[in-house]
Image (cartoon, rainbow, N blue to C red; front, side, top):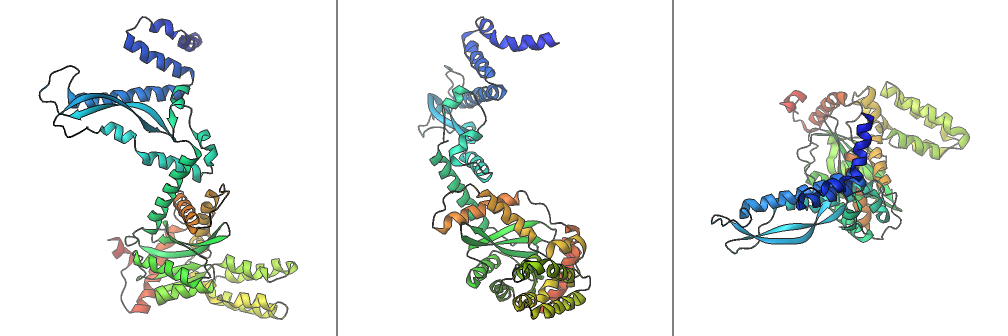
Length: 439
């Protein structure tokens, strides 16, 4: 068995002698394949694939024109030779010759459906987007291409730094348009999270929703920060205009910015139940304390936030604020600011894993982290905001591909029920139950 394997490998080197006994057309094809085989299996596959593509295009032309030299009065086109062109192969364009066929009625050339599929520029753009978002720099783009053989590589194009950059700009602009144009009317939204992400000293406000089944969906962004009420209000109003429905109640988890809270109430009114991120609050309080006291005060604040009885937890946090006020009044003010909203999720009856998930903005921050990582190789940011918005949108959509449902999603029906009851209290209108929604 070992000898057969060795003979098989050696046979590639002896193929020229065997090929010489075959017809000329077969000799040419097999010689090309033999050369590609010496360069590796992938190069062999590419060469074979291009040969199959040529045969498919020629077969398609024969259907239109009939056999070569045949006088077919019913044919709809006549052969017109071949023309040099290219098709998409991985992250490059590869030169081929495309068979041409002219319509017999003089109306012009027949488009090859086979060629149209292989020439789809969207495929090339998608490859470029994936590689750039994965951290491959434009100058290193060719290094990410698979080996296809010297002959095919020599005829390749669309791999220059400028052409890659143009495709990426087009791709990120498309991602931005897709994100900002999403129809939200079909989403059954239970939770909205809003937070800020910084790109090269400039901030973008981003929004993500969690549907009633625990699915995370990026829905919008604006250039600005969460302290800018005008920016945040415009973002939220746009979500409503695109179909975001808060009539059944909406839990909005924010980082604690006053402008953000004001904008939420302005757009959604009392239908929105606001919860503040406990991790943001704890970090803010620590920043007002000396290092020697940070761990002790933080542990007590965390214990208050995690008390199973929200009323007792609130009382404990207020007691802590009173204790630290004399020595560190700014820390006390930070504890008291928006304190009741630290216990919103627990007051809604949410427990277990879902409670831990929704007591912070971690779900949206994980998306922000991925969006920021995708731009890690950017060396020069242009002054205009378009570049930052495009990169941010592309990163958000790239993160969405990695999303799983939120931790504790099986507990979402309980949250939805509480939000429905809240909406009934606010509006006086009975809300459908979960089983009615499913029906």
